Length: 274
Image (tube, rainbow, N blue to C red; front, side, top):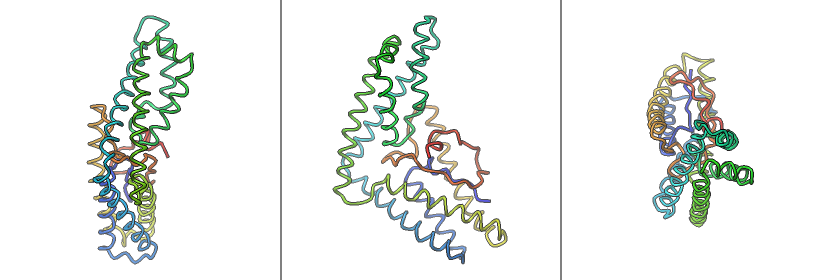
């Protein structure tokens, strides 16, 4: 059986490298199935696009400043969430009520919004602000003494949007695929490829057993690296996920092959956002 590759856990460079390894091992195995050959051709183009987009990041002057602005809003978002959360431990019933009111909105938007890609994160923040800007919530935020922090978060989001807009305009003038688009294009193709191999192995295990083992070894290796990074980030509150730097949107959909190599993380926000 083919192990699951959680593409949302991977950095763009890791996605490209892993895909290249899949291609190499499949070609070495001499798979005769015509559909697999067509898929390999598509995956090769995806790898080229990912590499082009990654190379472009080194010449786009706004990439670093975009990442820095995103880091600022992440820090403020976490600080605001945690400051509101403190309200549940207070003895004052008005503060507890304010906490319940505001935290419910934060929870609805996502307790780990900072893990999402640039555009998804901005969309969720816009929805959060639209609700929390209402007078009843502003009163509750002030009761929690989190109003200054809330306004700093909104200002940080405005600053990010301005810088990110400049970056997108610069990307457009370079007339080449963005990292976000390259990633979004590659992910479903990788998932289809792994699904096809899983099906072929089911019907002809003696033919695909060796190749499946090599594919699974590649998947296990990169997932071990990605999960270790994710654990470190959970421990330190960092937002360095598979969507940074360059931030492809975190709408990657993982394939549904068996995930026997690692525990299931299906409740993670990146994986549920499909």
